[in-house]
Image 1: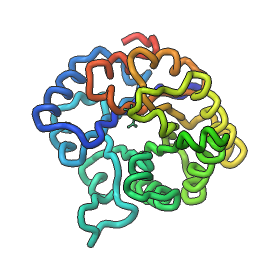
Image 2 (image 1 turned 180 degrees about the vertical axis):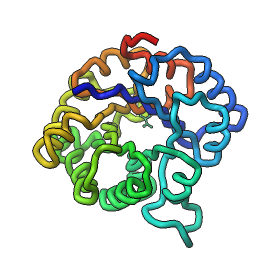
Image 3 (image 1 turned 60 degrees about the horizontal axis):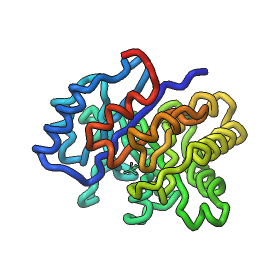
Image 4 (image 1 turned 90 degrees about the vertical axis):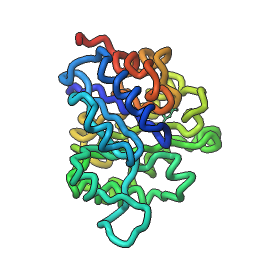
Length: 252
Ligand code: PEP
């Protein structure tokens, strides 16, 4: 079973209209593998989604960086999954560690959001990852399996889920996981899916790595058998994102 290489660019809370136009122009001019080989999502801040959507090449898909956990209504400041679906935004990133840590999103909330978004027809890039303290206490696998397990308790179908393993100590720090560290966690997550969901889901589900991915380290990390792509933060705002999309040597 071949899993299509998957790369996401998470712009986080960055940019102005001028920056957006410049970055989209850079993306549109980039030489990248054809969509038979790679699936690419771009996650701008909500307010820029319509602008990015109107300008972005059609072989790249749009993602939101979050959404509300249920039906819209009296939830000031929130954006619902229905709204994203209504705007034809196909993807949403959920459970990013910055939201877990800074916005109080628990495993249960992330699971609820994931189930609701999938039910609205969105595809979900589901993030998991351990703190440095948890890694040092040898709890990495327990943490990521607990985070993914919470979601497993709420959803019946994994076809529209990509799992992003993002060690928190590697996000935005320049401290990247070694290829062996990434492979070990991805392998264990796949084994967990095999034992707890099904061998088919384990084989088919893309597990991507995030945490200080750059043009310099993407080839080595991406050559691991269980690493199916990347979720990229800082480098997604720069020209080097194109090099990351070319981490595997597919023909254009
Ligand atoms: C991220 O925000 O998901 C991320 C991986 O950030 P960075 O690439 O900057 O570490």
